[in-house]
Image (cartoon, rainbow, N blue to C red):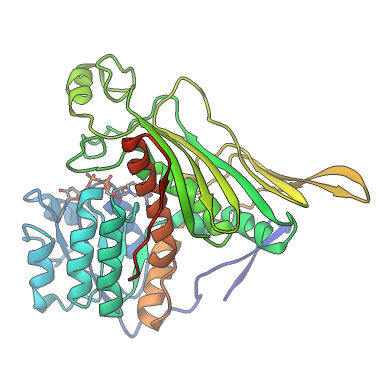
Length: 392
Ligand SMILES: NC(=O)c1ccc[n+]([C@@H]2O[C@H](COP(=O)([O-])OP(=O)(O)OC[C@H]3O[C@@H](n4cnc5c(N)ncnc54)[C@H](O)[C@@H]3O)[C@@H](O)[C@H]2O)c1
């Protein structure tokens, strides 16, 4: 493990092995060649031990264009879906990145794992808890690596949140407020796959909500969620005059909009911890508030953050007492030298090569998904629901 000094102030233990064994090249396929696949591809191309051998997309010709754009030669791309690509044994795939829209996360992941291929699956894990359970069953049977695409976790500031929570500096943690949002930010720049139910399945909740949940749940060791009272709405997405849509597409997008643009929830976690959560793709407010973590010895404020970009919104502060005096300790921002996608891909490849645990294990993200699923169910029936997670 490498130690990297940050401006002489802070130390970040990089999670990346500095020495990469280039004798064994991993054969990689990309499933879904849309927007985020670009970031996967760029990061793979930065690795010395990777060969991109194939890509599949439901849209004919899209995978070929994708390879052309990235200057990748010799990769096969004439597959009509993930199935055709994974059935092609001549590829001898070691791993795939699954970069498909949310409703197409579970099926390709299960298919790949059943074929004995390691999987890096984009977030959110799935759309429903039932799907996540099925993916995890396939993972267990296969013994392969399944990692979920939460790259903000690899940010040194995010890791500092975890270090603070785990250090005991805050005492016993009993209440967390988290979430985030945008004033006008329903993602439609590349079409409608994020807003149609048949492709996205989840709106703000699954797109950016899962990151806020991961930021705090990972920090406190992912306690099991027990109950949730959730709310969802779609006032902006369904509005034909919503100013965040392209002017010529407003009526069309409003008609197609089939997910949530706002969600809020009150979640009870194991250990008596309360999680108060809200997330917005659009709202008449600049921010739904900072993230705060309250403990018996101290409280941590994380300024309102676009945590989905792996950033905290400014220096964090611990509110505590020293010799009876109330004091505030500022935690300086740690500047990262590594790109988060490079770290995401490298840590996944290292797990595949070394047979070590997934950098972002499904066993943790299962609880993230269970909360999202609980919010959707509670919002539908209009009351608090118990979160029941079956054995895998
Ligand atoms: N980690 C991040 O920072 C980050 C950022 C953006 C998006 N994402 C996630 O990545 C996923 C994809 O987002 P996007 O913006 O790239 O979407 P996109 O719509 O641009 O691309 C998805 C592509 O997958 C293809 N596809 C769907 N099902 C397929 C299948 N079974 N086989 C082959 N191809 C298939 C579609 O044709 C499309 O080209 C989403 O789940 C999103 O939440 C993650």
